[in-house]
Length: 204
Image 1 (cartoon, rainbow, N blue to C red):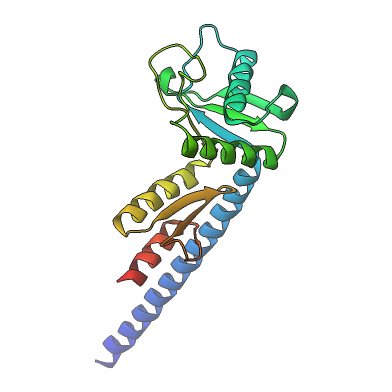
Image 2 (cartoon, one colour; image 1 turned 30 degrees about the vertical axis):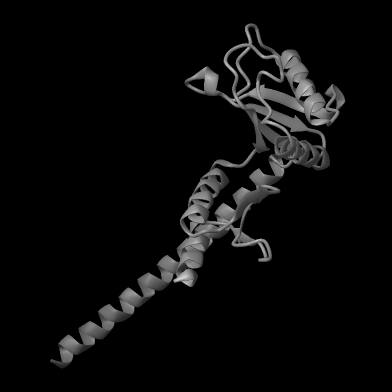
């Protein structure tokens, strides 16, 4: 019996060590993910996504820049070629669903574009391809921050969480995702899925 008891204690210590090592590994992986995310966020800090711009025939950067300039004219933000570092279309199996990425020279310009786009949509019918005189059926134009793949997933989950738990606000800022329950509450930063899990448990 003493031998069995010693073996049990030995196995218990081994399991505790494995659990401790596993926790440390998860913490290390999360630290690495956060570093990578920080680098991606910095790279995308001046970028916006523009969705529902129909593919032109032909289409090149010059044509896309003209389309962006027209968007700027509609929302009352001057966007000239000097303020554009790059513009391109993402690859998609269905070209009609590809997104235009606009990389601007400063974060301030990026934030101004997003701010004025939101203001336009609050004060008027949503900006559409018809307003931009683009061919094809009328579709709403969407402009948002260019999030990393990881943060796009977090944003999707956060929006779903907000609907399910009566959170009034869910938004992104500087590549980060935030939630707010009601008008007077402070913002809650959502860095990972675990943050949503913890927040959900606090609501119970």
